Image 1 (spheres, protein in one colour):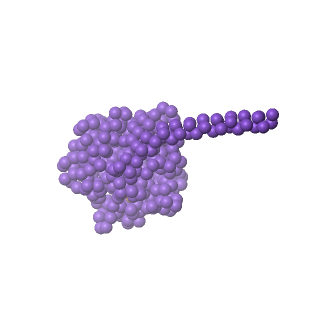
Image 2 (tube, rainbow, N blue to C red):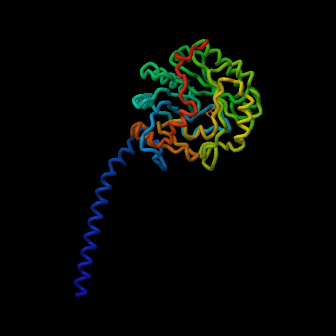
Length: 352
Ligand code: SF4
C-alpha cells in the first residue's frame, strides 16, 4: 500500500518537472529574437547595454526640448566636466538624422547640440549639417549649440549661421588665469578674447548669443557684472558645480571634481552679487539633475536621478516612447525652471 502511494507521488513529481521544462523552453525561444537583435553587426555592436533600468512613470513625457550630446571628445580639460570622453563614438550622420526625425515625430520643438565639444568632430561640419537639417528639413522652432567656442571659425557662420537660433558659449571667468586653473583653455588661445570675437560674429550673422557659467571654488568670489552687461547675452545660465558619479566623481570617473564643489550658501551669495543682471537664469544642483532630457552619443536617454548617468536603450532600437520612460525626466521641474522660453530667434526681437 505504502509502495503504491510512493510510486504515485513520484509520477506526479515527474509530470510537474516536465511541464516546467516545457515552459522554460518556450520562454527561451521568445527571448532569442531579442538577443539576436541586440547583436546586429555594425556600429550598434559598440553601444554598451544599460546596466539597470527603472521605469519611473507609466505615461511617457513629451521630448519638447532635447540635449543631444553627440560626442564626448573635447579639446579642453575642465576639472569638473560632467560629460567626459569615456568613448570616442559618434553616430553616422544619417543615423543621427534618423533619430532626430523620430524625436520631431514624438513632439520635439527644441534641439540643443552639445558635447564634449561639438565643433571638434569633422571640424564643425557634422554639427553644421545637423543644425541645417533640423531647421530646414524638420522645421524645428529652436536649434541651439553649447560650445567652448575655441574651434568656431567665421566660415562656419557664413555657411550655417542662418539655421542656428542660439549659440551658447561656456565661460566661467573673465580672468584668464582662473580659466587656466579650471582647465578651460587650450595652448595659447585666450578664452575671454575669443568670447568677444564670437559675440561679434553672432551679431553679424543674426544668431542669439548666450553664456553658460559653472560656479565653482575658483570663481565663486568673482564679480562678473560689468563683463556680462557689456557682452549683453540673451541668457546667462549660471550652474552650480555638480558631482556626477562615473563622470567627475567616484572610481571609474575621468575627473575628480570634489575640490570644485561649492555649498548652496556660496552659490546663493554669487547669485545675490549678480541680482541686477536681468538675463541671469540660475540652476541649482537639484534643478539640473532631473529637468533635462539628455541623449548620449548612442542616442540613449541618460537618467541622472541617482547621481550618476544611467542609460536607457537607444531610441534607434526601441523608439522614443519606450526609451524616454527610463529618462528620469521631470516635466514639471522642466517647466518650473523656465525650460520653455522664447527660444526661436524669429520671436526674439533682437537688436543684432
Ligand atoms: S569644455 Fe565642456 S566638454 Fe570640454 S572639458 Fe570643459 S566642460 Fe567638458
